Length: 117
Image 1 (tube, helix red, strand yellow):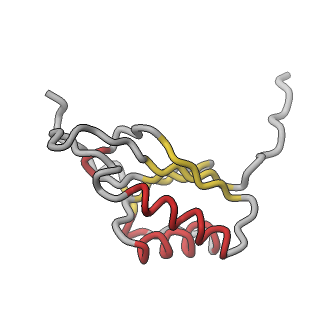
Image 2 (tube, one colour):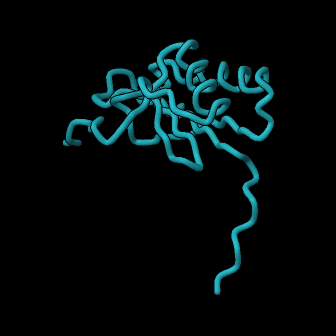
């Protein structure tokens, strides 16, 4: 019998891709699409909202470059594509405060990047 996993250290872990590629790269990059500014805003807003057991982190490439800025929230593994601070507010409110989803901002299995050639 396997030992039980320890309790979660964070209730939610938010990874914001801040990967930066060379200007003009065919896949783009989340940093070029403004992810660093959105990450900083998300960190500040999470703190303002009192989300104590939520960690907002910078991530390297999450391999969803064409849809960037890319954000993934664990433990659920839900992906989002925020473009504005209002989008970040919607994600924080719907997903992390209310426990639902910011459906219009979600990246799903239907969002398939073009083939890497």
